[in-house]
Image (cartoon, rainbow, N blue to C red; front, side, top):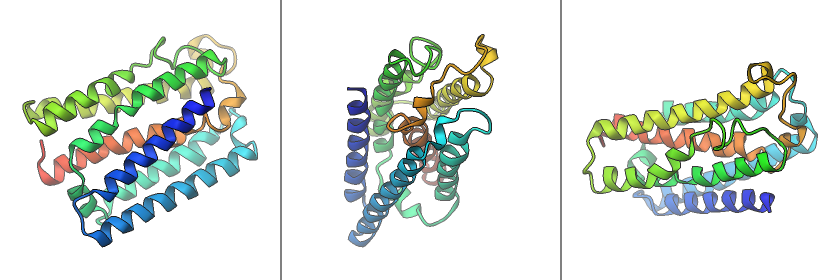
Length: 232
């Protein structure tokens, strides 16, 4: 059931993003280009993840952190390339600013999946909503911010800006908890990491390799739109 939940969330995210790209305010040629690029890139990334996971690369949770080196770092390199290059400015203009904020509500489902990982015994309670993970607040508030801030435009600019910053800080908190549990478990009172090797297999790798980077990407997308095109 837990694996099914991961698969359904991944499928829904891919479908929603493809729908957004296909309906973006762009020329037909550009829409087709972005749809094909996203579909191909996602397929290659999933194949890359599955290949390394199948080889057992991520089951070893000892330093150096392989999940960071081979999954999180490349994802962040892509995010940096996307926003620092000039190739995607048309997409920034073509996507309504409320859409990426609405999509942040997927973090509610992610938090429920992380709770499921804990209940299955693959991790401890600290990185869950029963512990010190408050990221679900970003997911719950996202539709409200999108509607009142970007569609109705009744919220002041500073509320939108600081909501975006707060959402990133919530992600930093979650990543920090997972990283210290793996690399410095003594900080939490554990003699060794309580994260089980099975966490380094599919579908659980979707959390650090897709769900977390996607949330970061969406925050940067919102910030980039605000900075370049004065949405706030």
